[in-house]
Image (cartoon, rainbow, N blue to C red; front, side):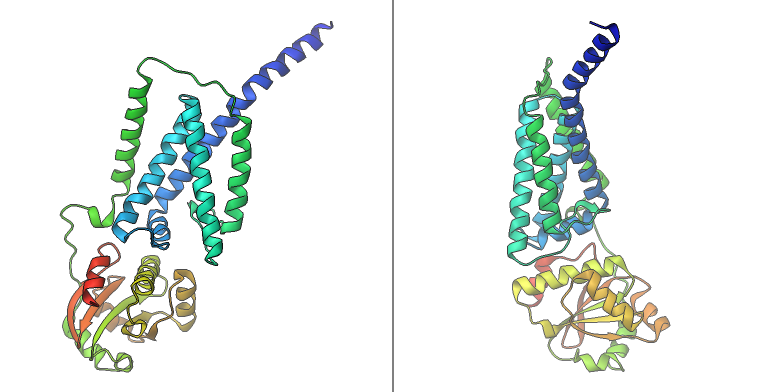
Length: 316
């Protein structure tokens, strides 16, 4: 046999042996990348999980982080090729579970992003299902890979799980589980009372009954997410839609864009022209959400300290 042919065949044999492990490492990196992107876009990922109403808002915070931790552990396991069968079955089960959820989303008629790669890559349910099927097909190719074991490997697995869990909760602590969280109340109530008696807020009928009023800037991302949270709570618990109102600073086009980006119900809303006065009312803090009972402020919150239980109790 020609020496060059022999060297070529030996090289091809090495490639044939290494390729499945390289593919497995790539799949592991996809899981790690997906988890990191979810952490970066944690707020929207939490809201996406809550939007199915399988869990309460508070528990959705924990479910979101549990999913990310699982992805990180599986990704690290795939890259290291340790506990191969455990990581393989765990990855396939996770992809299968996500795919079933996406089919359920299609059944509900949803077309919004599934946040599988956070906010950086937007996939609708169909696109994400195709992506998951491709990944599952690639996992079939690495099923027969042989993993490696070492002394106290289970201890290493526990350490990785603990470290990733701590890292996720430190980098992105859940809002309603943050200890000693005492949000400042920024609303200037005197100016707010004047505003709800003047145009254009006097058209909203805020002086009678219970109302939740969102003070928003049309270009504020956290205002958009607050509107989405409120909308999900209102629809799930059946709070009267006419008792929720949004007050904006911005433009008419900005209001239309706000509702489109927030994917919120379009509640009664007004555009506030006096920007300086509006900023004084909210102390320049957006979003500010005010609870009114017969024209009297009984509570206020922002995006981080919005509590599902408080809204339920308010409209009880």
